[in-house]
Image (cartoon, rainbow, N blue to C red; front, side, top):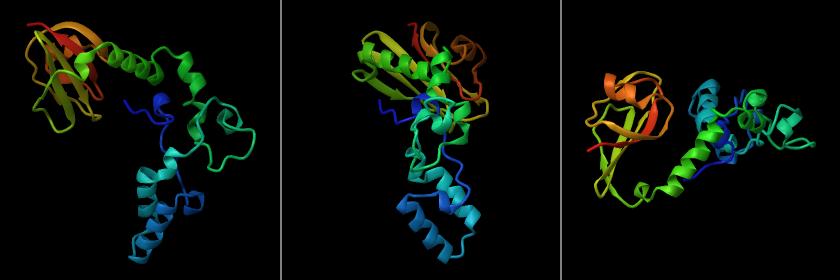
Length: 191
């Protein structure tokens, strides 16, 4: 899997307030071109905060100290103000953190060849739900992710044999046929 710097601790996009904080040449060119077309600056900044490449270039947030422990010098780009809450030190101290979830996902990937070498069946689901089944001989695995902050219906057949990873009680999803916001899990199904 691809894991980009900071993704493993849940780093977020920088809340750029003004164009003066932006260094990315593509973002600066985009701003100039769209300003010439009459697009309001706040709308331009909203776009840059979402898709600007500087988001991936801000300093790694190691801890709560000055410059997030990244450097004793002045970083090229500003440190995200949320480094007080989102940083490596905090992630390592919390066994339920995103860091440990990524670690578990990588472990599952290394230990289970069916994730890459088995039959793949994409399931029909609600627009904001991604779900598929992997079939490896007689074994079936279900992977589900609700990619929204709203409940979603999920009609699934079968029963849970074992849970590989979950951020919610997968068995409850099978019973209620409803995914809570951001639910995600991987289970092996019974026959």
